[in-house]
Length: 449
Ligand SMILES: *[C@@H]1O[C@H](CO)[C@@H](O)[C@H](O)[C@H]1NC(C)=O
Ligand SMILES: *[C@@H]1O[C@H](CO)[C@@H](O)[C@H](O)[C@H]1NC(C)=O
Ligand SMILES: *[C@@H]1O[C@H](CO)[C@@H](O)[C@H](O)[C@H]1NC(C)=O
Ligand SMILES: *[C@@H]1O[C@H](CO)[C@@H](O)[C@H](O)[C@H]1NC(C)=O
Ligand SMILES: *[C@@H]1O[C@H](CO)[C@@H](O)[C@H](O)[C@H]1NC(C)=O
Ligand SMILES: *[C@@H]1O[C@H](CO)[C@@H](O)[C@H](O)[C@H]1NC(C)=O
Ligand SMILES: *[C@@H]1O[C@H](CO)[C@@H](O)[C@H](O)[C@H]1NC(C)=O
Image (cartoon, rainbow, N blue to C red):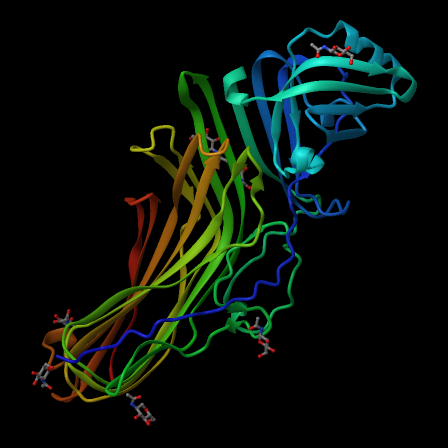
């Protein structure tokens, strides 16, 4: 049995994609506390109406009257003096009305104000007020509080707003292998892993999966490219504990997975491995501090299985594209998630295989398994899970000598090569896997060499 040394891979990726933070969207509703506490965020970049963007709406039904200054025409917030918060407005009448406010009012101060030096969403109960009408300001003595203690329920709604021209859905197809002009998709979630936009190929060509004196197994050109838009709706109530009433994440997008492997040397029987090649966080800041974060990342797992001894060189590969997929996961019951999906109809293409093997019968399989993981964190850890989906694409190479009937070749010693592609889509929550669909197995090649 050969001993194989797995090369540890340290792949440094430089992600040059520009992405935008969630910005506060201000509104000019009345400067008057109510039990409906709303905030609005957007990743719209500039004012180009042709570009789509993600937005988020957050809602709390509060047990005491509450106010988000960003939604109530407040123009300045000053937190520089002890436990005092000073709000400035351009409206003298509104300032005077503060005298009519109830004693107990909760304030939501968004991350943009860096209140008391913290760039996060903070909640305060006001204790005392002093009005300065000449400067249109009101100062509250405040005490920090927890929004979950003072709310009945909440809704967090992240969605994608289509650009007007609606041309941001890229069609990924075979042309992907020749250089393409980069399209501005900066607002979507990029699924590119090991992909160089300039060359249209792997950014780490020929990286070794397995290498020692006897064998070199290389990922000649392995990458994932694509982009997706996300929507998420999580709602729940706070009765002693959190009860989720809605929990859905949906993804729309397109992706292309390319696998080209090459083998050179002697591989012993029963060689197999399964290895996470890399795990990278995806650019795209799905985070509103202290409200929610999505922490998207892609793990790329490669596996190979060789059933008999082979000597020689072999290269094989193919690509799988999912031009327009939609996956929707509902996980109110985290142990029993539900899905709906469409568009997981892979288009596959075989790349020209090259064989220089001795003529032993053999089975060689290579697969690549990208996992898109979302680390969901709601209200600073009140709900926290790692979930996502994985697509498995496996190329099976079967080389046989001396087949019978329809598997025979004209010469007895002539090897027959059969290449099949298998794949499936699954969903995972932490360490639990839930199969969703198996792609129909596809025979790409079956001929005598
Ligand atoms: C196959 O590999 C095994 C273990 O490495 C070895 O014992 C055997 O002789 C090899 N067979 C051939 C035909 O090379
Ligand atoms: C409330 O504010 C007023 C004016 O700043 C001050 O005179 C008063 O002592 C404060 N009361 C409390 C309980 O802090
Ligand atoms: C992509 O490929 C081009 C051309 O080979 C190279 O100049 C560039 O540095 C590569 N970019 C990355 C991020 O690897
Ligand atoms: C692979 O191929 C090259 C060139 O044909 C050769 O020099 C090398 O020894 C081969 N074997 C391995 C294990 O890399
Ligand atoms: C995905 O597409 C479906 C149908 O085209 C649409 O209803 C849904 O809102 C989209 N979701 C996202 C996250 O863009
Ligand atoms: C996801 O599925 C749920 C339950 O079937 C449905 O209520 C929701 O509208 C779907 N969301 C999207 C964006 O497709
Ligand atoms: C390869 O294919 C042949 C013919 O279909 C079959 O008899 C053989 O069992 C396959 N080899 C393996 C290891 O599955």
